[in-house]
Length: 75
Image (cartoon, helix red, strand yellow):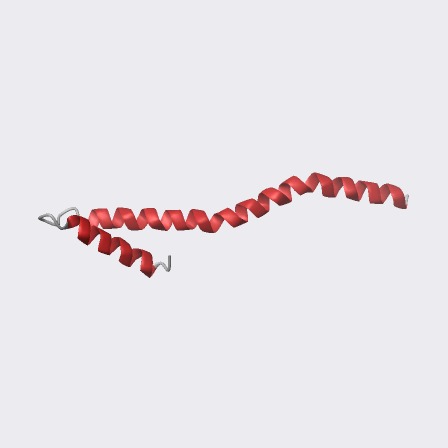
């Protein structure tokens, strides 16, 4: 009986390994996804804020706004 229980528990563990592996991968990729979302949000905000800047300087202003947003979000 004890041998049967060990076999069942080993089978359950082997069956759960793929799920555990997927959970670990998703936990590791979550911060990276968050970083990408923050970068996209900063880029979009900088584009919006510089849409009415006259002259040849909007790219410089946009870059400064983007860098400030990234710094504010600790990236």
